[in-house]
Image 1: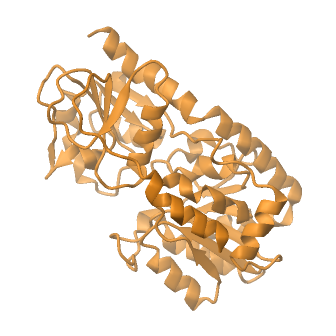
Image 2: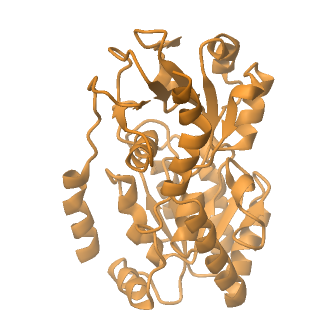
Image 3: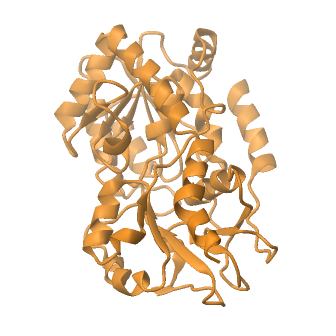
Amino acid sequence: MGLIKTINTKIEQRRATVLNSTSKKDIRYLVSNQNWSIHHDGECLMQNLPALTGELTISQKGITHGILHYGGIADALNRGKMRWPDSNQVHCGLTWFHILENDKRLQLVNALDKRLAFWHSSCQSTMDRLIRAGADPRKCHVIPLGVDPNKFQPATTEQRNQLRTQLGISEHAKVIGSFQKDGKGWNTGRQPKLEKGPDILCDVAEGLAKNHEVFVILSGPARGYVKQRLEKSNIPYFHTGYLNHANDVAPFFAALDVYLISSRIEGGPKAALEAPASGVPLVSTAVGMVPDIITHGINGLINEVEDVRGLIESCEKVFNSSDLANKLCFSGRQLAESLSWQIIAQRYCNELYLPLLKNT
């Protein structure tokens, strides 16, 4: 399969390097050394800063100036304690994407608020909970994730047909996409990570398969639970496996009829913009930044969390109406262009970084 071989050949060549330098940068964006979602967020943000210089780091040590932006609450903590920089002159900010059920880390909010210069989240629902837990509303900012509309683009009919042929997909099949990590751990992932809704994804696929020929494309690690369920239901699928760079998933959107977000809890997800940017109709639960950026019936279809029947009906509406599908694709692409990483990085500068640096 030529396309897949080409993608895998490029993976190792493009792996991002996490820096630990103490050079004179305005912004340091702290991530873990795990090459996954938050690393990609920081990479896109630092590359698109319009008026400042920034870099990724995996350590707070040696930072004595500028702004240290913790890319996620898990990355900010070491054994439950905050990894503060060596100097208290550094402006510190924290991004917190999603809050789990009975999340014990909320107990830290009051103490963290005394030192943090800003709180950031990609969605209003998370920010509301942080404020209720003690975050100062004057320090709180909601800025969604971005997307690169040059890398995620609508496919041509030729590209669509070529990929579907390579993946062995029937011309009559309705193809659903799910590109995420929804199993626990980093191995097979046979134990489901329920906040990501892998059980709901499978319930929806099984429901659609009663009336349609269904094919599922999966990406990301730890998809064992979903694969096992699909095999048991005799629903064909293709799994790309783990792709080292987040943008390597972009070509696979070309084969999709619909992208399905079935999560119970989210901060993003990235696919809420990647699918519209790629000209793929989005069907989603009302999680993360989806209610903040998606207008139901205009650039996506939104259903309540755990509403399997509603998700099935939304997918069927897309399958059965080319007018609706085209409308969602057109408006979705407009949405993605309005939330490019260039535009989002400008907001970070204007709302988070520049006000602090001007007062230094």
